[in-house]
Image 1 (cartoon, rainbow, N blue to C red):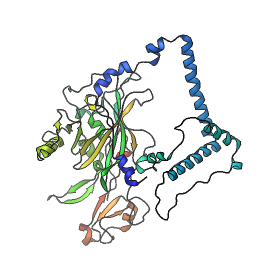
Image 2: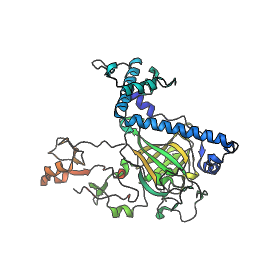
Image 3: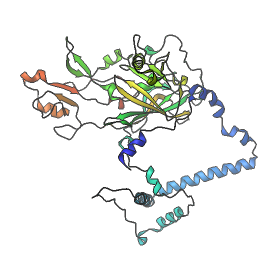
Image 4: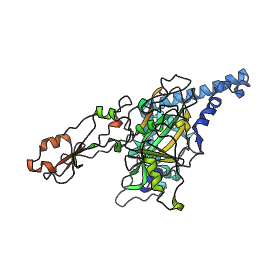
Length: 453
């Protein structure tokens, strides 16, 4: 598939669902989440009919499970399945008559000889050929839905990451606390958006997309999260592993000139913990939610900017009476597969897409929400000196290097030694983003001090 077409597919969302009120969803949940065995249709069945349904369901599922385990547990059979799958995919691409660049030929997988097929593989193939499903095979139209794996398909996490302190409210467990908003950020008076549902909690799965740096009209997935309806928008925003939130702080002199950069220490991060972002807004269904600053927050600045547009091109946007730290997901009306715009840290944009709204399941983690389900692996720049390890410093103004700024790893910069006394004022060492939010858990989101120059 063409690269531009593949990226274009990922940049379009939809079709969006009808607006879903989380509060109404929770109101209707008790009636929709009842035990199937208590359903009137099941109660009207006789004991014999119930036994027949039970035997058919349990027997069919058990047989399918046993068959799959036996096939994939046998290395000969599993290798055969991989081989015929790759052969079918290559055949589909050949039937689709895709244009291959000159000088490159698509690799054809050789078919195994008939005398080389072992009896158990032949028996498995006969069982597969006997399947009468018309959709079992692949035709040339299937090539439109095939592509190679992209970088955003890989996950930097080996397991689900707990990014907060939210506890699930469900019939299966009892929560320890209602949400993960720190005490310093909670409203002193009861909020009008306080949840009235003390029995159930909805789980909302959201995906964060970024603009592709070299093609701003296209998007790529950054991360995926699961939040509770009893949590706030600020709880979700804090869990996003954005590089803009990890930029090193500037060191200024008395005249306001930049002397260098450094990362905040743990103590400094705790002191400024109430300011979870240097400005942030989230636009949902024509309502913009600001960060709640006393003077003028990002929502006010957005509305002021929109007033400069012509009346015919001015979108109808209103500011919410509650801030990000006061607005619960339970008070929102969302649409699935519809992107919502987020702006923070000056000019860093994200597009938030709701993938799923559902009730809890006994297998869901009881605490640690928001949960981070997926993070696209970072692609760090390689050191320009050794070309072996990722760079951690950007060196600006050093005449000994071939370019400015020059990206170096810590050992190479240490081996370079300090610059000459007359050039030391012209050299600036800038630490690169360390992607610490990817690895820190929700128990300690404070920044760490490292890379002292």
